[in-house]
Length: 334
Ligand SMILES: [Fe+2]
Ligand SMILES: [Fe+2]
Image 1 (cartoon, rainbow, N blue to C red):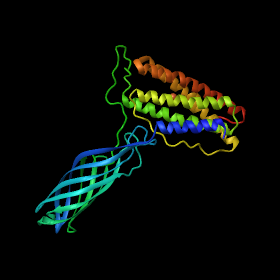
Image 2 (spheres, rainbow, N blue to C red):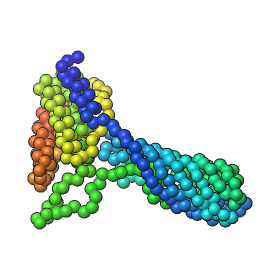
Image 3 (spheres, rainbow, N blue to C red):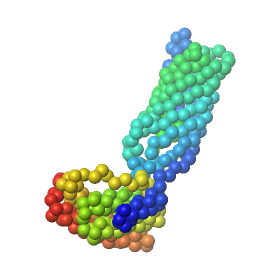
Image 4 (cartoon, rainbow, N blue to C red):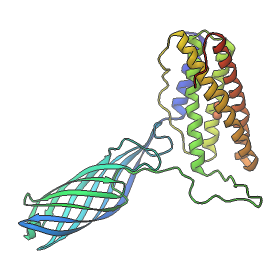
């Protein structure tokens, strides 16, 4: 193992240590109102009011970026159904999760879950029985099917206030942006914005480690490999700067270089990505950070100035790597 291989491994370990996937418990207090039909001898209108407290795990993951990933939760629920013949009182456990598998901001959560517990008054008769239920939901909309004491069934639909599980939290900047006297947006750079930036910066660490690994495999000049590794170090520093400005801690998966390609294909990939992701994208990122640094103040201004300076250097590295790869037989694909 060369010292550059060891440096890649060390930086990967450092990034994994600094930006781990985290999880924390989330308590949800909410309720719902559902209207439907209850079937016992003959169909009757049913109105159900419910309240619950659930506990779940909110897991921030690399794929989810700065958004909450799907989570499952479980907890007690109490409900009363008003049906002809008298109310049905329900005490149960509700549980479920997000089954949509997406966590993009704005994407509705597809929820599914169930409940099991006891019912009193099923069929309009006094007495305790088993309560079973299943529900599906789309964000705050919910539909449920329930069986009470194996003698009365119901289907209903309604609204949840604070769904009991599977919520997402977005990172959109809340509200309308403030502008200064000259009409420029005042870049207060809210915590959520720094969170997004921190995540992007941390993700770049892995991109540079992957580039360094690919260059190593293709016997690229040591100078280019070292510049890629130095860039990975820059990106760690950028992520820490963004976190220090109030951003949530970014999360990263364990670094695993992509599968090795035949030389010609590897050179095309290196050239193409170094052109688009390095030269163009990092050049734009440098420009954007520079512009933002001019309207930011205090430590934010310094952080953005550092990022702008480093991103410009990364853009130059992208150009140099693309040129080297093209000279060796690669090309830039669209
Ligand atoms: Fe960066
Ligand atoms: Fe960069």
